[in-house]
Image (cartoon, rainbow, N blue to C red; front, side):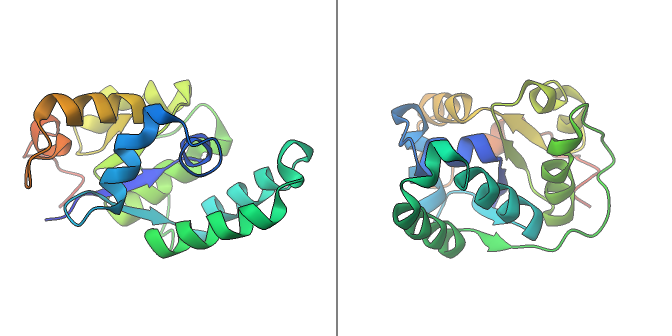
Length: 163
């Protein structure tokens, strides 16, 4: 079974705008045949587009169009089908949990402390919440061989949420 990953907006910016070298292993994994499959939804796409329209980013509009095309080609679209069984303190971040639940994701990659603080609860049900840096660190530590994936090592096999 292929792992499914939700990428929040700040991690997306690190991957596609800032080209943060600490996220390079995550980008490689998302682009590989054996890595996790990224998912997106209308709500997460709208947030990315909204952020890219901010004055800080607006000067590079043509570059953003290409980055969005690459993301849409890389990430599988998914419709939200209701609320996740977990609630985030930051209502703006709830959409990432809802997407993870709808897509039956095993990974949520974020820098957001409100989301990261939920990891202990979500992990018991099959959703691992990590930073991109921790994902890369675990991937590197595990050797990242053909079928070795971070999730296999960390997510308990009896995860109820995935059934």
